[in-house]
Amino acid sequence: MEATYLKYVTHATKSYRFIIMENITKQDQLAKGAGFLFEAGNPETTFIPEEKNEDQEMIQNTCREFVQAEIIDQIQKVEKQENDIAGDILEKAGELGLLGSHMPEELGGMNMDTNTNTLICEEMGRGGSFTTTFAAHTGIGMLPILYFGTEEQKQKYLPGLITGELKACYCLTEPGSGSDALAAKSKAELTEDGKHYVLNGQKMWISNAGFADVFIVFAKIDGDKFTGFIVEKDYEGLSLGAEEDKMGIKGSSTRQVFFENMKVPVENLLGEIGKGHLIAFNVLNVGRFKLGVASLGACKSNISIAVNYANERIAFKMPISKFGAIQYKLAEQVIRSYALESTSYRISQQIADKIDDFKSTGLGLAEAKLEAAEEYAIECAIVKVYGSDAMDYIVDETVQIHGGYGFSEEFAAARMYRDSRIARIYEGTNEINRILIMNMLIKRGMAGHLDLQTAIGAAMKKVQSGPTTNGVDGPFAKELNTVNNWKTNLFFALGLLMKGQENGQVNMRQDQEILMNLADILIDIYNAESVMMRLQKMEAKGLDWSVERNIMEVYFFDASSRIRKNLEEALCSFGSEEEVNQWLPVVDRFAKYKPVNVKNGRRAVAKKLIAANTYCF
Image 1 (cartoon, rainbow, N blue to C red):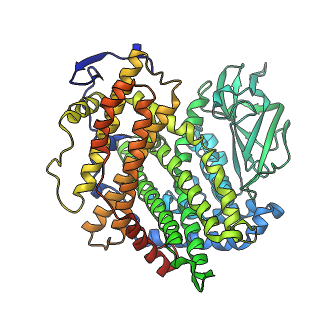
Image 2: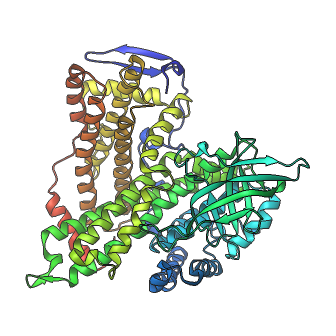
Image 3: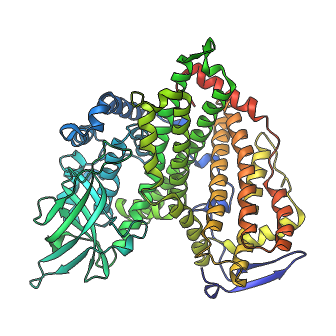
């Protein structure tokens, strides 16, 4: 962000100066992406897993049974890609309606509600490397056609993709363009008769390429107009590289795809010429959300495996699950998974509500889904980052709980460890997503979509008087006030950062470390508030949340330290020593949470898990 893009009003205070933008109209923040930073969340409007209806329970159980029977029970065949087994499993999933649960009925889909689709995605996350196969087909493989295809393209391809008769893949990455997708060198040129585009280029790391029938491909028309195309496997000039020898997700087909003077009919151009970036980036919003949700399924599966082993493994004449060090690991696995689940279904409901809002304005289903995902692009990035990070922690601790056996390929822990690592890389690396979170927040503030000026101004005033209870009481008073204080800290730091940009102390295009610090603060705020809202709703419904209270309190206690550290790192990265000495006492006051006996809290969580011998939260 360049300072010349903004008009600033500067205000003198006792120990600092801050900046806010002029002439942004106050808007309803709750309906907007990142609105959680500006207004308190409303538990009544969120969805929690504890309120699933009978149909959702049935669909989730059906999906879980499918994953167990068709994937886990024959995981060795899946890992070795025997006899195109992934394609066969996709077809069986199509028979159950799992490939078209998010697709319009007129195209052969089932058009299930958003929360039910989220439950399906979670269960498919238990499927190891097949999760990538499933996600690549139903997400980035099918959605570009649904969102951007012509009616003829939808009718031609989507019914077959919904049944599994056709399989899809998504060709974006090239040897010289990963996160920088627009640096792609693949080219397309219109033939003299105007009937075809001649496509030349190379793509790599393409999931499902080995058995795909339909390829979503991006190339530059005339060398500069980044555009999408629908390519069929039988087009002359298409060839594949060998299967990649990967560290993990070995059961997922991953190949290079080559295009040599391949003729693509003009009617297979996808979207508008030169606007392929809209397809690529908007579809990734949904992909990120689904990746985070799929990570949740993997997290729960890992925790069940970990506690099973801990209860069975005897050391010093007792199950290792009785040892405090192991209980710490099990409880921390649950805490991170619970936070991820609370956040995932909060976002799911937000997207569902936004789809309904857009449909009420006259948008069709596909357009409404696309716009809703774009509105909550920040939240989608949050769940992708946190979900993949949480999964990595959980699978690592599952290996550790297994000890030497965790390093053996005879146990599932080793495979899960290898499979998890890719999640922090694809759908945009976690580093890219952290930077995107902050860039989108600032950009939306600049555009007036979010009232950043008022939030920064209010934070700058509030830090002068210190934290207050704001009249909040009840069983969640500490948490409500803490979340509000963390938001104050974030906006305080943002105000200082923007002033630093104006003064030349910081360059937000280059000083990415600072943006990642602030993104992690934002992620912790959203997760903590989501957990709190879930428990608030449980209390309102008369459900027992006595053990879950420990999850909330331990998460808040740990988050307070992380937030304090990230604030200190960010401010020290651009402020002078004198300025930092003025700022740190401010953030200290607003980062604190109450003292928590985290040992007893984790032990209470572990006790429930150990007794159930499976994930039970």
